[in-house]
Image (tube, rainbow, N blue to C red; front, top):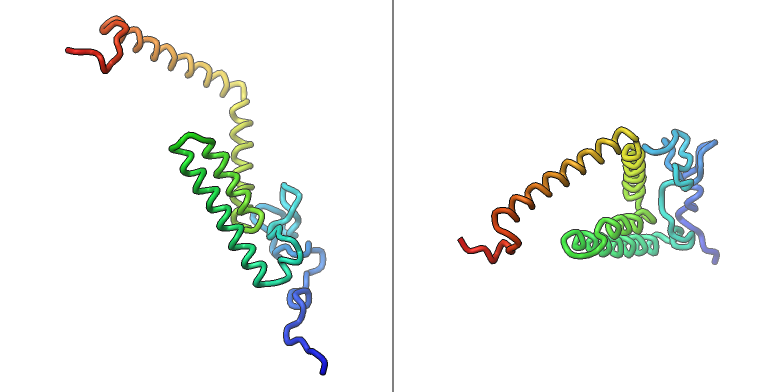
Length: 165
């Protein structure tokens, strides 16, 4: 008795249109060109799981749950580090990078974040902006020095909690 398959292969279910990249959405992505070509990172959107994992639905779902749980733990640790000692934002973006290995929404968030950070870096390196920032920093330091001077003249070198009036 021969075994017959009731479901066609994944390749047969979703034929790729001519000129498109396999595995990419037909309409392209919000970040990439309309033909679905890979975005700025050189890789298209979608799962980075090994092929044998992607081919088995249950295994792929388990893989996604594992990636989500690990990414969530890292992001929660990063959020805690925002109020506790530690590199909070770096850890949060590390958790997002873990999620981006499997989820398109996280890949899009990371692309948007990279673009905004790059824009901010270019803006901060603009000579006019740098000059303004240096002037504002200088004014802030002068104000702080004046406040310290007023405190020292009024109370001396006494700590605030030791002042009795």
